[in-house]
Length: 344
Image (cartoon, rainbow, N blue to C red; front, side, top):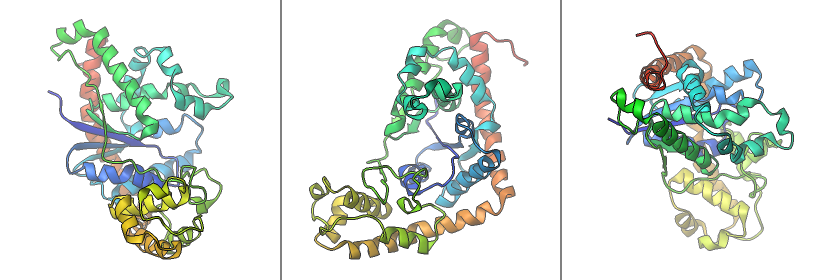
């Protein structure tokens, strides 16, 4: 029987910011009320490009701290880091042999990340969509919260699941499994995606790689830092519009209104009803108060947690132990289906 289960992962690449929080973590917290959730710090994905080992360790703990500080309950749900559950890598190899080169050649994210010097990119960067499929399917997850940039990878996971089920249909039946051994994971749409843009350029996505720290609000910023960045955020000379249509040609205004709406849990229309016709100075003051109120406690709790690495590591170890129970069951079944001999 298929249990409805959510899986999602976050790469430990450092400097978690407002975009990560509003784009993913807020939804992770909400999903706890309606689904069985598995949240993974995908450290194996991180090393598809070179990482400083000491920094990677810190970043794994920082993402875990952000999960907990934002409200994810690691006792009710599973929080772990990918490399502690070996079934991810085992199933990824099986999927390397199921997926077709043509499928991977169509992956646009590899082309973007590898740039012009593709011959010098790691094999891991090329093949990591197969690992992503394994991440999801090793738990036979039914739902995955995804942004626009990950939809193609979820489609690949669905293709791999279908091809595995077709290729091994006789063996799946012979071992007493449902012919749809791997489910077709569905994208989980949790409302309008919050796409947070740079505070210095409303046409560019908020990013940790931007050289200007004033382009983003880091989750670890204190109240003064948050206030300063919002007040210095780029705007235009016109008052805020009263209707959403008025934001279409004003990317910086649209971004700040969107941030306010997401933090307040409101629609942009409601925000403009309250602030339309007013100057940015008054709106920014209100946004500062809201952002400090919402993000300040998260940043403070993250700092507290990262100062207690033993506790953070214990959360990851406990989560990995519980994840391994589910993943091992899937992996043992896959070995039987494929025809491997395993210890019993």
